[in-house]
Length: 208
Image (cartoon, rainbow, N blue to C red; front, top):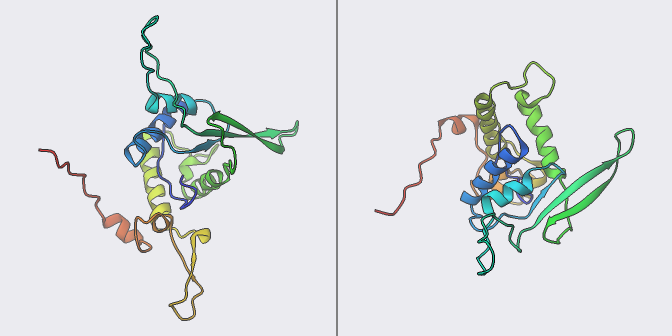
């Protein structure tokens, strides 16, 4: 999720945190971050750092001594921060521990936006609700439901924190906006009909 626009920019659905994170970073690599991952903040789940190295890591140059390196390594300009909740014996959160896995920038490290987005997702998509009969048993059906829910969230659902003051419409104080509008991907709030009848055009290569 992009914290400025609240836009859901990538998703990963797999059997483990690492596999899902690899899908996310591969998507980000295609969508504007080809050389290095963006500033990443997560909770204490394992697998994200390994996935970041798998997708973006580089094998160090051979110095001429010993065996040539073969394993990918993280780069110096990466920034990955974990916001780990610390709980007491009753499970109540008593604080948040900030851990810089890569880099050293720890300000504004929070998972509040993505956690709120996860709650919204479970409210819209019953397949993600745990311990219910609606819990998704098939990965492909779960992925299809997630694509639909993400599209609705980005293009149709207005977000109160994204609204802007409105001065050119009598009787209206605020102009509602969706995450896609805040990100500059569209100039209006879509309807369900528009979403269902719009076909994305394939990217055409200019190479012959």
